[in-house]
Length: 309
Ligand code: ZN
Image (cartoon, rainbow, N blue to C red):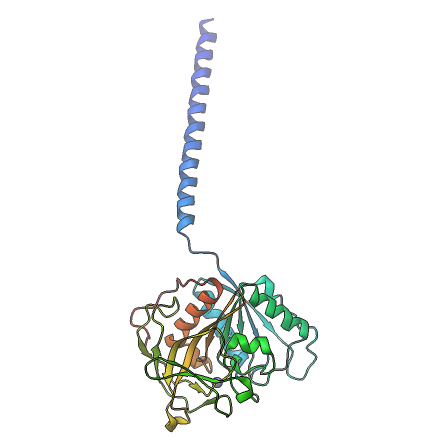
């Protein structure tokens, strides 16, 4: 009897310690979960699902796309897929990227690109007007002069037959007054590749906020004489285009933002080729512009000493 009572006491002691253990485990789990929740609320936002479209451009898209992809993914803010259209002159009817599956589309098609099929154009227009983000990168503003909606998205463009029927030249005067110049003439021009100074004209916009008011590019192509519908566009930064280097003598838009429906477009004319897009002056403005186009917020920091030499 004594033995049995002792066993019972021991069992109940054991049961008691098991239940205490269970409470301790539960408590530890709750503490850990609370910790996880507070960590996750401080985590960066979900990556921006990005699609780069390329395949037809007189610029070396097959070289620049992988570099753009790598820099976007390395920033930690973007995941990137690429959709390459068939070569120029080939059947385009099956080219139907699923724009709606993305937050952001980067256009790396350009000069003399064949038109997309009608359904693809309509899907892209719907993607943007429904609130999608777009980056117009350098020669992307050469593409598709006869696609009305696309030209409204880029605001201004050059070459491929653009002239006064495409819309006014858009530039600024020294004091930052926006000029819409309806004079006749070709759309698009650039001089030799030289380093040049960029002047931020809107220091409060999320993309340019925190950038030095002036900064230098590496050697790059400075576009000039761009013209187009120029609707719903804000010029964020300009560069003076000297006549001595085949320029216009005006302060030409280098970075712009455009609204189209509920969509947001960032247009950078910088970045002719791989060496030019590896410069901070391109990279940081491009990444910040891309983030803004998709989210209307910018978390990508301007590095100390921007732009790096
Ligand atoms: Zn170029």
